[in-house]
Image (cartoon, rainbow, N blue to C red; front, side):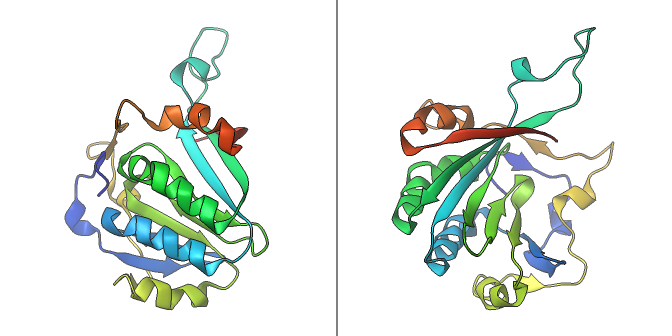
Length: 195
C-alpha cells in the first residue's frame, strides 16, 4: 500500500489485473508505480498530458442554504503538451509526493492515441486504451497476473470496515501545493467533479 493508505483486509488483495471494455484495472504495489509510469511515457512518442485530481478544499465545497455540504468533490488539473522529457521531469519532481499521498489520483495521458494511465487511492491503477492486449506483456513484466474477477480494496470495505487515506507531506509540501507551484509549467484548473 501507499504510505498514507491502509485497508482492513490486505490479505484479500493481490497484484492482479482485469480487462474491462476499454480499460484495464489493476492492483499495483506502491514500489512499482514510478517505473510503470516511466515505461508508459516511453511507449508514447507523442505529446502527453499530466492529470491531477485532488479533493476539493473543505472551504470551497458547495453548501446549501443551511451551510450543509452538498456532497464531496474533487478538483481536476492538467498540464498539456508535455514532451516525454517534460513528463519525466514532472514525475521526478513530485512523483514521490504523489505516490505516497493517500488522497490524490494522478497519471499521464497521450493526446493522439487517447491512452491514459492513472493511479488512484488504495493502489488501484487504470489504463484507458482501445487495445488492452498490448498491455498484457507490460503488466506481466511487473508480475501482475490476469484475472476475470479483480478484487480491489474498494470491494472489501463496509460500514464496519473502511479504508483510511490521508494527506502526505514532504519538505513542507503536499498535494495542495502542486497547483500553485506548477503554474510556471502550465498547470491549469479544468473542472470540479463530484466524488
